[in-house]
Image (cartoon, rainbow, N blue to C red; front, side, top):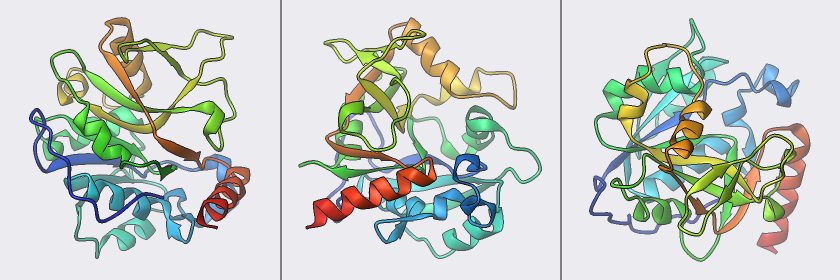
Length: 252
């Protein structure tokens, strides 16, 4: 859950009112049978649907418009988004063909525009530290040296991390991909900022986003910002209970 009511941060190298891509089209297979009838973005954690928690945080960070892609149980997500005013919601319809995250971004590019924008998974929420993390992320964007900036979480203080992490971080913030069999201290939180030209350069219509991260890392243009607070990766049924328990503990 995130702090609300904070003024939007200003970053001289980003638009005052940014845009965001929110990935809401996935099947949620690891959360079945719950997601057989309820799309994962609408699962409630801490009394609020995960997608609403995310969109509230984006609004606080100065996001004026969010593109939300839909596929699985799309009508439910569209109905939920209909009355949302801030940020303004544009639906990207993937009912006929699920495009994966990269392909979903490519389809949405005409709406997302030519400036760097947020990329956001809906199954990752967090308990804030002293300063709102999305505002910290946009303030750290440096386009001269970065192609992608990811918010990463320390695996030791996260909920729902059942793998060996994704990256290690160098002293200057550059991210290095985990090697096979290696355990690394940071996991990708599902939140980042990316340059649109990286997506536009891909010729395929259906493709994954992760290879673009790894390519940027090889070019030493992938950077990370450590999440301040607790990351809640709600990707399984067990993680729901773990996240709820931590939220309850923090609220006491």
